[in-house]
Length: 187
Image 1 (cartoon, rainbow, N blue to C red):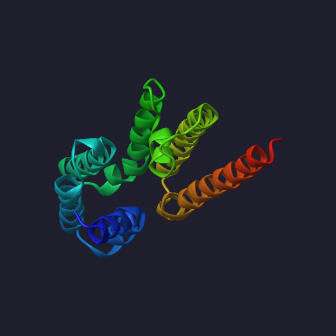
Image 2: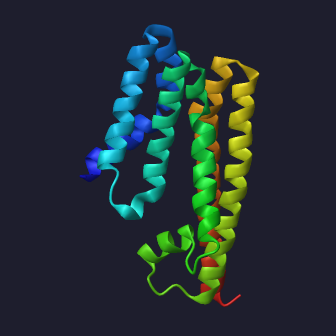
């Protein structure tokens, strides 16, 4: 799949909470589910090879909540998708902690193939931090489902959680730059 197609599909998936929020207001349940099933099918078909297991699991989660909602005749099942995504990401990151290379180390090696032992230890710690994030984020996403407030659910899952991810990414990037600067200065 081309980078543009991947980016477009990622944006569509990221907008899921807004699609559900507005879809529940302006579309029939059948039309909304058909749209989401189409997105899940595209994600499964175009999501990459076997090395993209996480992406395929997330697509299967979307497929699952859509089928569950269809069987129940209610859109409420769709609200569990962010919770499932956090659980899947937690499982992928936690599983990688038991492997020779963590998810974060594999990403780091794309830029720095000869990652020093300190870098490997650092990426392992960052992977642990992301696991903690997915636990907390998933718990809050579940709390928004139980709260029963669509506006709160949409706000948190469509905006706040992405903001928190961005803060974690940005904070880690700043910390990494600082640590690399210290290492270069010999501190």
